[in-house]
Structures are given as C-alpha cells and as structure tokens.
Image 1 (cartoon, rainbow, N blue to C red):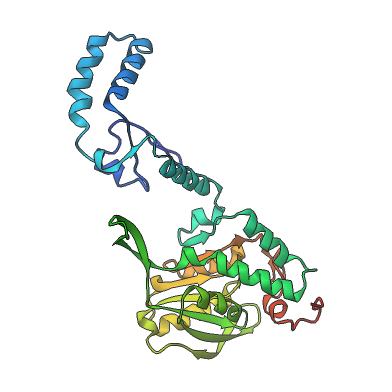
Image 2: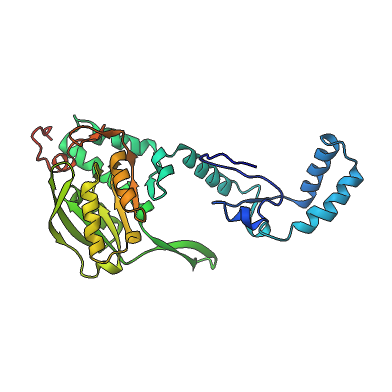
Length: 322
C-alpha cells in the first residue's frame, strides 16, 4: 500500500503497534483501552449487523485471536484510557499544531514556531505598528520575548520527584550549563528576558559588521571561557538574510561549541534567512514566533517590524515620541 506524503498520517488497527517495522516509523503511538465487556459487545454488534456473522463465530474469533494477542506486543505498554480527556485533548492539539504549521517547518525539522495565540498576535500587532511609541514598543517587545520562545528552547532532562503528598510526579529539569550570546546590538534587547528566565546565566557578545549584501566581518567577541561545554542560546530578534547569523554561528563553532548545542532565538524570521542558516547548519535549532513573507531589495523583512535596534533604543531617524 502506498502512503502519500502529508502533514499527518493516522494508522488505525487492532494490532498496528505489534509490527516493529510500523512501530518504528511512528512519531506517536496510542492504544485506546476500554472495558473488555464493552469491547465484546461492540464487536458482536458490528459483526452480526454489518458483516452478517453469527454470534458463535464472533465469540470463537475473539477467544482465538483478540483475547490471545491483547496482552502482548506494544499494545499494553502504550494504552490510553478512552475516558482520559486531558491526554486526548493534548493529542488533538498536537495534531492541530502539525496541520497548521508553516511550510518551512515541514522542510526543516530544526525550525520551531511557537504556538500562536491571540495574546501573541496582539503583541505582534503592537510591535509591528509604525505608530507604536518607543515606550510601548519596548514594553511589548520585552513581553513577547519573555513569553515567546523560552519554553521551547531550553534543553532539559526528564526527572521524577516525590510531592509533599508522597506521590510521584514525572517532570523535567532544565539544563544548568547554559549561556546566552547576543548579536550586538539588537540581540542585547533579549538579554533581560533571558536573565529573568535563567537566573545568573552567563551572557557573551558578538559584534559583526556587514560588508555589502553578503559579506560579514567579525569586529568583536567576548564569550565565556567554558562556552564549549555549554548549551548556547544565540540571541537576535530578527533573522533576515541570515548572513550575520551564519557568521556568529561560525564563531561559536570555532570556540568548540557543538552545532547541536546551539539554539538560535528570534522574534521574526524571513524564509531567505531560514534557508541560509538551516542549509549550512542543519543540526542547530531555530525558535521563532512568526515567519514573515520575504525580504525586499534592501534585505529588510516584509512585513517585518522595521529596524528593531533603533526602535528599541530610540535612535532611529524617525522615532515616534514616547
């Protein structure tokens, strides 16, 4: 049977999880568990009404095949109660997210766009608006940075703990060996949000000078001496052409940072920049809050939010009075 490419493929079957070849192809495995008497009643109704089988034949088939196979394989280990509304809703939301994800996320598995809510879109509306005052731009940009990407970007390990009631809770512990690196100067606007989320985190800086449309020159770098042993959160609110990001990433790699230990955080990304970075560095992770349409001839993101650094610092030539 040929399965055509699609955003989500759902395979259904009584023993679909028993075959290791099929099991290994799946990103999510679910076995819906229900009461044995309910399963038998449903099967008798289906087979006698829809398939014109007699009851004795159905009972024999159940006793020989279904009852024998049920306890084995992958099924029991992955079962999910049919009345588990919380888990079911999480699965449904995950599928909806996959169906609604940007096309570039389907091409590059290392690109992640945070789930869009009315709150996120509302803040984007404010920071993108040319009439927004400097005071409001800073306030909502900070909020967007803080609530946007951190939950997606921080590396973690799973851990079980004991609650005050003596119960076991399966949670996560975020990696302690983190550091931030901001691409001067726009990236510095993201440092306060990072410090608020990661108390006492070390932060390095990289200054890159543009030379024409593609050339980039390293002017200055000051990084933690042990950066090679850390996970690095690279900070720049706007990913445009990707040339500065590529240069900054090359600096981190030259310091011994594994590519897979780099997470590039920004607020908006242009498709051109994503292509540039992902094709050159497929092992790093990019987290953004929105993917914009394109770049114009001046390499500005469209629709974009203008010169982020100037608007944040109030140094632009046309700054709206605060």
